[in-house]
Image (cartoon, rainbow, N blue to C red):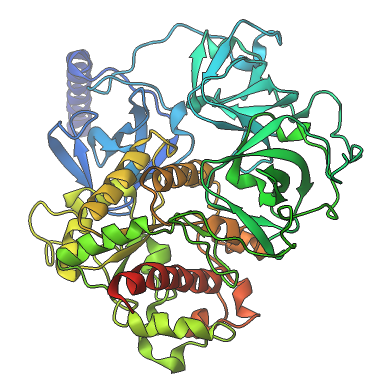
Length: 594
């Protein structure tokens, strides 16, 4: 028993010594530890193999790697939230936020310095505890902005605020990412990240107001007395065309065309009619009366200042019978009325680009696809190369010449097709496949060298924190368009359909796409406008990421039957063929003399 007691005392002695050593070592370790970083409860998942860097920028050296789809805890961010400070398997460092899926609001992560240290902020009372009173906070708009009924991009658009407008802030949402304003008789929400803020935005009260007209409480529902010409009285509101617009005999795409308004020209807006997917404007363009899609215009005042009008108003020009199609503006083509797609910026100016490409060795009968999983999929046009057993053109038999002419391009796996591809990856050589691409080439340069196409169908999405005009998404996509034009390749820019809430909102992306198409006057295929008319807005109700698909087999995506055309992938295939048909009809044949 004495022996056992001695052993027990020895054990106790060693335990006491060990505890003393731990107590001595802990303060020394703490003295050399990093400043504590508060956990933000955010998680980032890598969209591909992702470099961990020692600081927030590509100029900092690599200190680790996150494999594709692996997750890391988000500990902080830089001021712009385009780089995040993470911890992955014991390694702390910085990764590009636009190359991650971030679960949660990245703006809630603390701002850290390059070493990951978080300064201790002065205590600030929570926004909800602030007195609900208006302050002197103001914002100035950096772009033309939509006024929305709620602080989300999916809410109803109530009107517009033009670039440079300064407005008092009436309230904000909890995250201070949206501000409540009143402009031109409309109260609603605008995105704070598109504005310059004067004052402390957190001094504005948190609000859950629903936007709408301020006075009168509801828009007028009666039509003013017609003038002697049988049309509504002049409202003084000017609409500016943001595309080459068709003027129709009624408020809908199913009405016949009576004229056209070229991009950038103005017209007098006399009334409005709310259609299924947006507001149509009754306009007067130099004597031409008719209807145009309001979402392709910018109004000088809020749309709520326009009266509702009927559909039995005079249309056409004096002496011109209703339904007659005038000659298109000089150099611009009006797309065939049979097209389902809305395609603009197609004109004789594309001939010079095409000719320059031929001199560079581009093949006139080749196109490439640039995009992510929606374009990588076998469902996107691939089976048109497999013969008539794998498609059915139905009422669109005239598109057979497109399939014949561009044979070999449909089923090609372009280097520019990458699952999860974003605009920044498109321009970064890191994402080029070394098996096919030369050192230093990005995927655009690689695919152009390998295939020498004359056309490029591009639908680019992005997970960047900000994707509107002036963002990194905008500048990377713009750089890709500039590169293609320099090679004589005509880019066909496609707008983006609805994405699920966990992804970036589609409206700012589409604003960037339209702005670039306008700047360079390159073809714009407004796929978003069509997708919005489909059941479920064309998007799978479960995934909320990809387009709806017909039942198997996969080549049903190429069967253009009336029933199948209610699915997103089928309608997109039809409209992609129409975009290629426009290139064949208005570019290839005139230049090659066919």
